[in-house]
Image: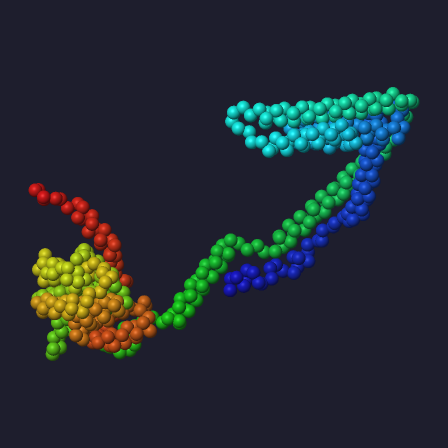
Length: 512
């Protein structure tokens, strides 16, 4: 609405625009035509004056009294002499066969039989010298041929020098035969015409510039009056419009995302989608352990163990590792508070969320015990001994790309069953589908608690996760709905870095 008001509603009233007087402009078309005509006249007078000055300078530099035929002949002789001077200088500076051949090819030496014979001799000597291969020592035949080539070249240059002397004598004869003086050319009249034309063009240009300045001032006045008549958009209004657009864009994006991928709104909606009962609802006030009041994790523990057949092994799964690890840790705390020997096992070695929850090293752990490189007691760590709680934790262990063989799997299953039987209550953390498959290979029909987050877990992924649990052979016992801020756990790489730093700082015993 703000943008519509600011940009699309007509600005200002009709009266203010009508009250603005139209700016008066001068017609500069006639002045422009006169300026063009004056410039053409000045250019013609300038060219006439330039041509007269050049003719006068040319006649002043030429010998007096030459006729047109004599001047043409003298110019031809001067051209031949100039060309011959350049080639003679080249032959003197670079006494090479190429320089001599260029000298013979000069126009002044055309028809000279002696230079033609010298050229043939030069070519013959060049061929004979090219047939010889000069060595590093003294090669008399090659040196003799080189001396002969130089002698022929000098003879050609001498012939050219003699020809240059004959051209000089011919030009001297023409200058001597000239009689009379050429009449001087008058340049005063063309200069006066040129100056008058330039003065007229300058006057018209000044009048045209003054008219254009007055028109520009009139245009600026009209533009200022139009701006004063129109309402200006204040910066605060533009800022408010940008804020409105940002709110609308954000709301539209969230609305389209919710329509395309609806998320969990209430715990009852999770119960309807997953077709499983709700065992616990964790809200913001229930995140920290407390003594009084209703603890949802205590209710979750009682819902698992207060039946006719007590559940001894529970699998906690979900789409968020931090939530799954937190629910599993609080469930183990509730079992230990009930004087139960509790075991927490992390099946997800890649995430190591249980190690992040308890602040322990991810390695060694479950993957090492299943691979047969560690004993179960070696990978088990007591957590609640300092608080009088019997809680043992088995971290995820090292990430192993290779899968153990069938015999190793069978042995690990039997050993894990014996090891798990030593505890009253066992919580297995399996946040991913691959870890859930591993749990089903270790435990027959494990009782599973599926975790979901209000406002974050999608309805379709929750329904698919519940269906996958049932298809994999697990028993979906119920749901734990997280309706609070997501917990933050240290990632695996940070835990490994801390473990390496602790090993470096650990003092070495004496004698080792």
